[in-house]
Image (tube, rainbow, N blue to C red; front, top):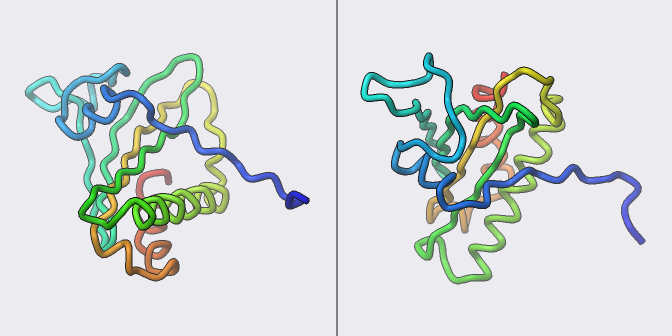
Amino acid sequence: MHNAKHKQRLVTLRRRADFNALFNRTEGRTESKNQDKQPNGQAKVWRFYSNETIVLARRNIQPNNPTYRFGIVASKKVGKAVQRNKVRRRIKEVVRTALQELGATEIKAGTIGLDIVIIAKPTAAEAAFCDLRNGLDGILKKLIS
Protein backbone atom coordinates (compact mmCIF):
# COMPACT_ATOMS: atom_id res chain seq x y z
CA MET A 1 0.00 0.00 0.00
CA HIS A 2 1.36 3.36 1.06
CA ASN A 3 4.83 4.05 2.27
CA ALA A 4 5.22 4.08 6.07
CA LYS A 5 6.78 7.52 5.97
CA HIS A 6 4.34 10.40 5.56
CA LYS A 7 5.48 12.93 2.98
CA GLN A 8 5.27 16.54 4.11
CA ARG A 9 3.11 18.62 1.78
CA LEU A 10 4.53 21.88 0.50
CA VAL A 11 2.55 25.06 0.98
CA THR A 12 2.22 26.50 -2.50
CA LEU A 13 1.59 29.91 -4.00
CA ARG A 14 -1.79 29.82 -5.69
CA ARG A 15 -2.81 33.38 -6.56
CA ARG A 16 -1.56 35.28 -9.55
CA ALA A 17 -0.94 38.32 -7.34
CA ASP A 18 1.51 36.31 -5.21
CA PHE A 19 3.52 35.27 -8.27
CA ASN A 20 3.39 38.78 -9.72
CA ALA A 21 4.69 40.19 -6.44
CA LEU A 22 7.93 38.33 -7.10
CA PHE A 23 8.11 38.79 -10.86
CA ASN A 24 7.17 42.46 -11.02
CA ARG A 25 8.57 43.48 -7.64
CA THR A 26 5.22 44.98 -6.70
CA GLU A 27 3.30 44.60 -3.49
CA GLY A 28 1.24 41.44 -3.45
CA ARG A 29 -1.37 40.20 -1.04
CA THR A 30 1.15 39.97 1.81
CA GLU A 31 2.79 42.91 3.53
CA SER A 32 6.52 43.30 4.09
CA LYS A 33 8.32 44.91 6.98
CA ASN A 34 9.81 48.35 6.36
CA GLN A 35 13.39 47.08 6.66
CA ASP A 36 12.83 44.87 3.61
CA LYS A 37 11.66 47.72 1.40
CA GLN A 38 13.77 49.35 -1.20
CA PRO A 39 13.96 53.16 -1.50
CA ASN A 40 11.13 53.09 -4.06
CA GLY A 41 8.82 51.48 -1.47
CA GLN A 42 8.72 48.02 -3.01
CA ALA A 43 9.59 44.82 -1.16
CA LYS A 44 13.07 43.44 -1.72
CA VAL A 45 13.27 40.39 -3.98
CA TRP A 46 16.28 38.09 -3.72
CA ARG A 47 17.45 36.32 -6.88
CA PHE A 48 19.60 33.21 -7.03
CA TYR A 49 20.78 31.34 -10.11
CA SER A 50 21.86 27.77 -10.82
CA ASN A 51 22.43 25.95 -14.10
CA GLU A 52 18.91 24.52 -14.09
CA THR A 53 16.84 27.07 -12.14
CA ILE A 54 16.29 30.68 -11.15
CA VAL A 55 15.00 31.25 -7.62
CA LEU A 56 13.14 34.40 -6.58
CA ALA A 57 12.30 35.01 -2.92
CA ARG A 58 10.79 37.71 -0.74
CA ARG A 59 9.59 37.91 2.83
CA ASN A 60 5.94 37.59 3.64
CA ILE A 61 4.13 38.26 6.86
CA GLN A 62 1.17 36.12 7.70
CA PRO A 63 0.50 36.81 11.37
CA ASN A 64 -1.73 33.78 11.82
CA ASN A 65 0.46 31.27 10.03
CA PRO A 66 3.98 32.25 8.90
CA THR A 67 5.33 29.71 6.45
CA TYR A 68 7.51 29.07 3.44
CA ARG A 69 5.31 29.16 0.35
CA PHE A 70 6.61 27.76 -2.92
CA GLY A 71 5.68 28.23 -6.55
CA ILE A 72 7.24 26.29 -9.40
CA VAL A 73 7.20 27.63 -12.95
CA ALA A 74 8.13 25.65 -16.06
CA SER A 75 7.45 27.48 -19.32
CA LYS A 76 6.99 25.92 -22.74
CA LYS A 77 10.69 26.52 -23.35
CA VAL A 78 11.34 23.56 -20.99
CA GLY A 79 9.46 21.18 -23.26
CA LYS A 80 6.06 19.69 -23.85
CA ALA A 81 3.56 19.11 -21.04
CA VAL A 82 4.97 15.74 -19.98
CA GLN A 83 8.50 17.14 -19.64
CA ARG A 84 7.30 20.27 -17.80
CA ASN A 85 5.31 18.20 -15.32
CA LYS A 86 8.27 15.87 -14.76
CA VAL A 87 10.52 18.85 -14.04
CA ARG A 88 7.95 20.30 -11.62
CA ARG A 89 7.62 16.98 -9.77
CA ARG A 90 11.39 16.64 -9.47
CA ILE A 91 11.83 20.20 -8.20
CA LYS A 92 9.01 19.70 -5.70
CA GLU A 93 10.70 16.56 -4.36
CA VAL A 94 14.07 18.33 -4.07
CA VAL A 95 12.46 21.17 -2.10
CA ARG A 96 10.52 18.79 0.16
CA THR A 97 13.58 16.74 1.08
CA ALA A 98 15.75 19.84 1.52
CA LEU A 99 13.23 21.33 3.96
CA GLN A 100 13.18 18.11 5.97
CA GLU A 101 16.98 17.97 6.09
CA LEU A 102 17.19 21.60 7.18
CA GLY A 103 14.51 21.02 9.81
CA ALA A 104 12.46 23.85 8.33
CA THR A 105 9.14 22.06 7.96
CA GLU A 106 7.60 24.30 10.63
CA ILE A 107 8.25 27.95 11.49
CA LYS A 108 7.93 29.30 15.00
CA ALA A 109 5.16 31.80 15.65
CA GLY A 110 6.24 35.42 15.33
CA THR A 111 8.79 34.77 12.62
CA ILE A 112 8.58 35.84 9.01
CA GLY A 113 8.07 33.33 6.22
CA LEU A 114 9.22 33.47 2.63
CA ASP A 115 7.50 33.35 -0.72
CA ILE A 116 9.79 31.41 -3.05
CA VAL A 117 9.31 30.93 -6.78
CA ILE A 118 11.52 28.44 -8.61
CA ILE A 119 11.70 28.95 -12.37
CA ALA A 120 12.92 25.96 -14.37
CA LYS A 121 15.35 26.72 -17.20
CA PRO A 122 15.21 24.66 -20.41
CA THR A 123 18.30 22.75 -19.24
CA ALA A 124 16.30 21.34 -16.30
CA ALA A 125 14.51 18.89 -18.61
CA GLU A 126 17.73 17.03 -19.42
CA ALA A 127 19.44 17.52 -16.06
CA ALA A 128 20.03 14.59 -13.74
CA PHE A 129 18.16 14.60 -10.44
CA CYS A 130 21.42 15.02 -8.49
CA ASP A 131 22.26 18.13 -10.53
CA LEU A 132 18.89 19.67 -9.71
CA ARG A 133 19.36 18.77 -6.08
CA ASN A 134 22.90 20.16 -5.83
CA GLY A 135 21.87 23.47 -7.37
CA LEU A 136 18.74 23.97 -5.26
CA ASP A 137 20.16 22.67 -1.96
CA GLY A 138 22.77 25.42 -1.81
CA ILE A 139 20.22 28.12 -2.64
CA LEU A 140 17.66 26.87 -0.11
CA LYS A 141 20.31 26.70 2.62
CA LYS A 142 21.17 30.36 1.97
CA LEU A 143 17.52 31.38 2.10
CA ILE A 144 16.34 29.35 5.07
CA SER A 145 19.37 29.33 7.34
